[in-house]
Length: 477
Image 1 (tube, helix red, strand yellow):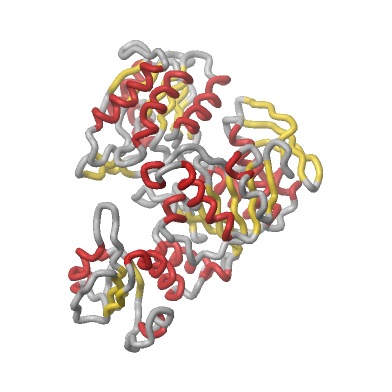
Image 2 (cartoon, one colour; image 1 turned 90 degrees about the horizontal axis):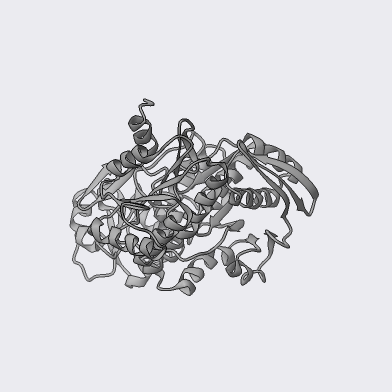
């Protein structure tokens, strides 16, 4: 593609230079790339224009008045992110038009529901790619990235979708975060289906309030041709004027019986196609709801409900989601739960099969919604017998201040430091402490990091693998 062709929606005066890529990250610029200078909360891309040009950028898109030796497309600052999405989609040939794409959104449950839907599609012969929190798969196996983005920026999204089409895939499942929807990363993705799990307070530092958070999430449903909505979520019910299937109490898909077993969940559900029995090898009643959402979504893609119900039994699970590290003499589980609602659901799921005490290691991220720190501390004390509060990507914030807020919430729930909760800023030492406190029959939940492969601390980013660390501390490897 030439620069003239790429810039056609914005200008007709660009030269016929061959474009080899589009990026917003100056570090990724190679000769022939177009660099889009995005203003950000911490860094302004305009500061890196000179570096991008030095690396070989053949053109720059930005908002500030600049004198450059390469073609410069100047737009309003508010137009830059939509322009990045549009340029990336044009460069990669609008790959979403060649795929059936489901977007999954919600505060909790996105990742598990996405993995379940991908599994159900594959089990019926509809191989699907995936982009989400844990990683991405363009058809060659799951790749775990070294960042924490649920949804990558537009050039990465479009590039991955293009790889899927080149590999012959016809279906894809994308986790759609509220940040991605608000920041136009998914503007040029044509969604066939939107799946809504539920909404609870999260990322309010970014969205301002729950209405802002809801408005960002709702964009996915408004853009999709069809939605799968959770009838048990009041926010989802506000969207039921859109074409949709529903799940949950009174929905098109509804659980009628549920039995929790040591090996998983056995349940029955009703659907437009009839009543079915299913077994899911996962812990936690809420995962039955995630499975129901995935079955409804697979049905929307053309998979027979009975076939989907049967395929749930062969689901292999999700890295960092209720991942069991050991069962004896005490059980150790790694899970991504990092919101009060998610933590309460995970601890509640573990309680029935825990003979002794429930011990949780939990932190709260820096430079993220500070309003959830005290509620996390309170939730830990309400649902566990002992909590160890520690770091979780403290970034530029003092971890001690974050832990003080969590301790405040714990005290509000009647907790006493040293008796029902401990403070240990270093996460590795916190995990070791939890193992020292554990006795036969106890369950230790390592919450908050899950699958993530980095730990952000002040000015450094450490390599991190919570499951591997736990195994080393337990002497399992």
